[in-house]
Structures are given as structure tokens and as C-alpha cells.
Image 1 (cartoon, rainbow, N blue to C red):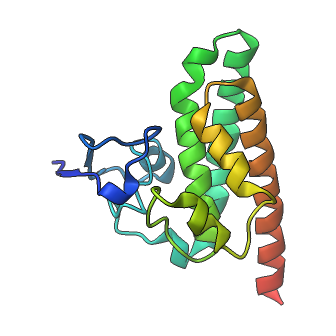
Image 2 (cartoon, one colour; image 1 turned 135 degrees about the vertical axis):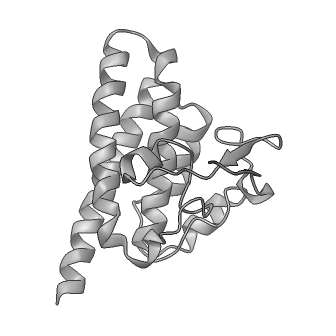
Length: 168
């Protein structure tokens, strides 16, 4: 049984949700399925887990999921089917944003002022605000895909650095 609720206004963003958007609580338990069932499912509390409190248990799976999406998107761009990349890119961007915040020990609390919230994060790729804004306005472009791939690579390096720091 699923329960529908309206998306909170602070998550309205034309790439992900509109004022008329509703979301369903996902009954799936497999992380990959949950992350591809809705945008920001954990941050919107559609799941009971709180990945920002235990990023080591969740962030690596976001990277694995991106590897799968990246392969799919690259193939579509190679076939000159950029329009078919839209949904995969949306999930790639949403999952990147979640992982970025979780690594910093916080959840995504809003998309309406994402640039301001990203500036407050301690661990983040260089020029993240401008780069993510570009990707979010034109996710279908090949350049956006390349930029997102680079952001994921940078985020993985930051994550590896954090793991080492916390082990000491």
C-alpha cells in the first residue's frame, strides 16, 4: 500500500517537482530501487533511514548507481539520442545533490535556495554552485553530462579523503 503526499514547497524546482507534484512512500527496501523511485526519497522522509547520519553506509551506493546511469547516458549520447537522457540525468543530478549533502552530515532541506545551502557545506567540489546550476538548467546537453560526470569524480575523491580523515 502506498501513501501519497504533496511535495513540500521548499522542494519545488522545475527539474524535479512542480506545485502539483505528489510523491508516494516507496515500499521498496533495495537502495537502488528507492533512489530511482522518486527524487530525494530519503531527504523528503519517504524512507525511515537517515543517510546523512551514516553516510558511509549510503554514499558508496550512490556512486555505484551513478556508474550505471553514466554508462546508459553515455550510450544514448553516442547514439545521438540526447532527448532520451532526460530522466536518467534528473536522477543523476538529484542523487549527486543528496550524496553531497549526506557527506557533510546534513540532509537536503530545500531546493529553492540550493546555491545558498551548498555554500555552507564544508566538503564540496570547486565552483559547485555554478556547475550544478548549469546542469540543472540544461540537463539534456552533452556538456551537462560531462560536467556531472566530473562532479561525481570529484565527489568520490572528497569522499575517499573524508574516509581516511575519519579513520585517523
